[in-house]
Image (cartoon, rainbow, N blue to C red; front, side, top):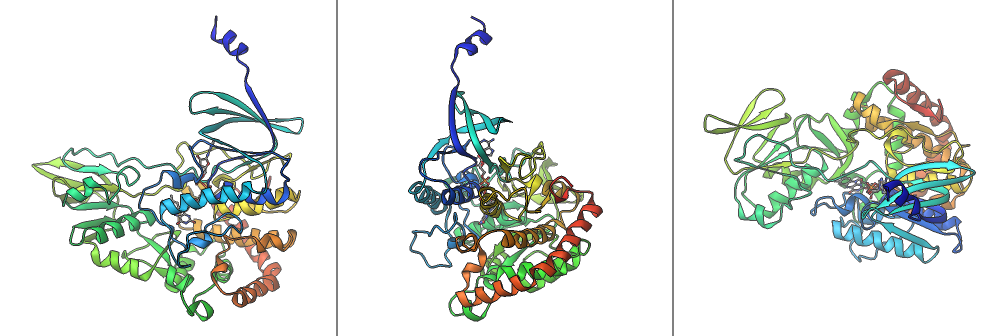
Length: 493
Ligand SMILES: Cc1cc2nc3c(=O)[nH]c(=O)nc-3n(C[C@H](O)[C@H](O)[C@H](O)COP(=O)(O)OP(=O)(O)OC[C@H]3O[C@@H](n4cnc5c(N)ncnc54)[C@H](O)[C@@H]3O)c2cc1C
């Protein structure tokens, strides 16, 4: 029998549902939470993810990762954590994954969710008001899902990093995703460690090494440097929650007011000096990461050396090992040293995913990914766009979309400030088109760190000025579109 004849005889499994969500990371579970507010128990939801459990990138990122924001603010909708820790506690990877499971359980008390973990969406096709998704399981089974609506929450495609490829066999090149800094191999060695990268993973790695192995030589090759938002200033603890710090809405609004689409250097300087913390002499990057002053000090004090350059290789030369930098300079490295690849995960898709609008022409397919970003974080996209979808307003509200991947390639420096302006612009439109409960249930709103009276003042200020400010934000985003020739505007522009 030919393969074609065999496949013609194999019945393809077909599942039908009201809503199919592809991606069970933070964006997907927020979409699921919102859907559970609109659908009844008799309306079936199918949840698909190629990973074998929910949690998205948290499933296979490095073991010593911790949340960088207070744990209560990382959730689906209004679902509370059950950890019983202080509100400022930074949850570990296992705790984050357990919270994802808890979120699923809570949602499943309201609606029927059929989970398909280990399944990958391969292709889609839309006709006669039905979306057909062709999916394959990890063991090669085929399934077609017929859905009235689909939310594709693939996020920024974060996958584990490989070790850096280096020529010398006399040093060990590792990736945090496959080598726990607290593990036996690292503990058994007292050789120097060279961390390559300057972002959140590099800081987590440096902090872990410095606190686990006091006195060990830890070096940082930090590229062009990164600054972080200072957690102490954005999330002050104790009574300072009543009078200290600054609410996220205020910071974003001020950022949006200052940025005009051309002055990212000035805005970065303002943000860094007002709310930032950093340890490298230059800080060309800002990736919305958080670090506390004490973490920053521990790392800065514990590092042996900080080099502002990019590692390209490690080579054996005349009996020595040279770490070769992009600038052409070299650094002697002791045999047996470790090189840890902390060069980052976000927006690195290779090849880049194709552009897909955040909502299809028919309004049935929502796509949450960087080529048509509507907020700075996918969790907000999952939360707000799903509300607009079920309110039948997603095609009606003139949200701006940004090709964040294209902009990153053209101007990494402008990207965070464009995302900030985009988020505030779109948020002001969502406020005008959705009921109050959308905001009352939004547990990922960082303002929730603060007591209610302070939140109410910030909200009132935002509400009073949003229309006027929206005009400025729109001009800023239009300037970005013209200046960088990137997609940045309403759907179809
Ligand atoms: C190292 C690191 C640390 C971070 N720390 C924080 C932090 O402390 N706080 C914070 O708020 N954010 C943090 N982030 C950002 C983080 O990426 C987001 O918070 C969030 O977890 C992303 O969720 P997501 O659902 O958009 O994407 P993901 O978590 O990547 O989930 C997307 C899911 O979609 C699935 N998928 C994609 N395509 C398909 C397909 N075709 N078929 C089936 N399944 C598919 C993937 O398997 C994946 O599970 C961190 C990121 C990194 C890389």
